[in-house]
Every structure is written in structure tokens, then in C-alpha cells.
Amino acid sequence: MPDVKLNLVVAMCNNRGIGINGQLPWRLRGDMNFFKKITSETKDPEKKNAVIMGRKTWFSIPEKFRPLANRINVVLSREMKDSPDGAHLSRSLEDALSLLSTPPLSDKVESLFVIGGSAIYEVDLYTSCSRHISLTKEL
Image (cartoon, rainbow, N blue to C red; front, side):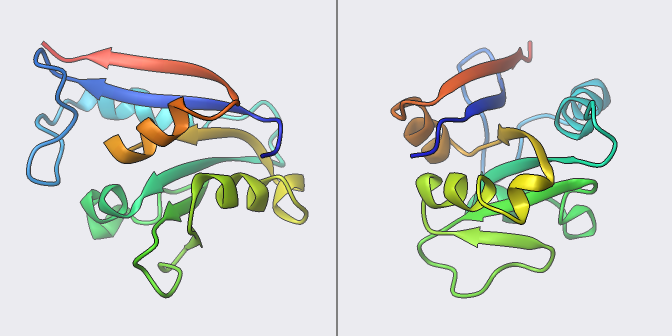
């Protein structure tokens, strides 16, 4: 697996849940703005950040917001046959990291963000990559 730093972005409620019925259990403008800012902003204006997500997370994003703007979107799925419009498809986190660390994408990517769901977070926590976790606790 490539030597990369992964940034996990997750929000949870009091019972440590991160979703319900395929959606976020809340709609908080401040939380959405924080998510957009942290996953979009780059130091180098020529580069973009990559967001890595599972299939269920991809489909939980309202269609009008897919792909997430100004970010390289990577969807992890063993079930999907074709790449979603505006996104790359990888079969595993390891494949996604390889894709993003190889030209031409490696020349365009500044930071990598894992944005869910729970199965993807679990896989990530067992990789040897270094990581930063941004955790928001919704009360």
C-alpha cells in the first residue's frame, strides 16, 4: 500500500451513530460548511483534494450534489460495474490509494479524505497509513 496520510472526516450523534436509513441523522448547515471547507480547500490552487467513500455514502449524497464539487471523487464498491458519473471507481481502499498515488492523478491531488461510511472507516483504521481524524459530535 502506498505511504500516504489519510484524513478521516466523520460526524456522530450521542449514541455514536453516523447514519440512519442511508442518510445523516441531522441537517446542520455549520457541519456541512465545515465538511465542504475541510475537504475542498488546498494550499496549491493547481491541485484538488480527493474524497474516498463507499457506494452507500455516494448514493446518500443528493444527486444534484454528486460528484462533490472541486474534489476528486473516488467510490469504493465491489458491486458497481461502471464508474459513477464524475467519479472514479475502485474495488478496495488499497486500489483507491494506488490510483490516487499514480500519475496522472497523483500530480493533481493534494490531500486524501475518507468520508464514510462505516465499513470504509473500519477498513481504513486497519491500514498502516498515517491518519488525521476530524470528528464532529452532534448533540
